[in-house]
Amino acid sequence: MSFSKTAHILFISFLLIALYLGICIHTALNAPIPVTQYLFSESGAFEVMSPWLWYLLAVLCLLNVEIKPDTRVFAALAAVLLGLREMDFHKRLFDISFIKTNFYRSAEIPLMDKLLGFILLLGIIFVFLVLAKKLVQTVRSMKDSLNIAHFFIFLTIACGGLSKVLDRTTSTLKEEFGIELLKHSQVMIMTIEEGVEMLLPILLIVAVLSYRRVLNQPH
Image (cartoon, rainbow, N blue to C red; front, side, top):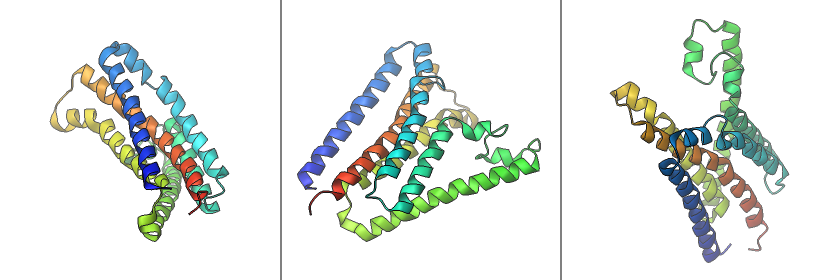
């Protein structure tokens, strides 16, 4: 893919992302707080649609024959796991989330539940470690010939980090520094966090589709 075409795709992508986040921020600034809270709540459109985007990503990973079979399986499995997380599977299986340290510290959780949760957690970590290793190997082997699909993967990782920071901002400020943000500020942070979180599967879907198109391009 030529540099000009890559630059054009990236420009369009950033423009669409900016437009999307702009709509989210506009909603938080102008809509009544109860409306915004519902829109980005567990029963709102963003939370309801996010798992299905992850499942769609899993299907696309399996269908992309340009990707190595083992990578397809691990990528699809990771997407399904993230979809289940969006549906709070990690909270429904036991009394509290088994991916948090409080689960293993609690005296109220039976030992067998802790063992099962730990085994599940190890399996999840293994899947993502395998994918991380494959990504690092790809970056090292391709060096300067990375295609646009890898850009969307790195952008997803960056957005995921930002989402996690925003997710913990309100509670961290209150618990660690005794600072309680205004309700409108909390809603604004929640809006951006949920908006960015929904971007993650979308960016990876674009990466999968772009990867197929790039590999089919004549050199």
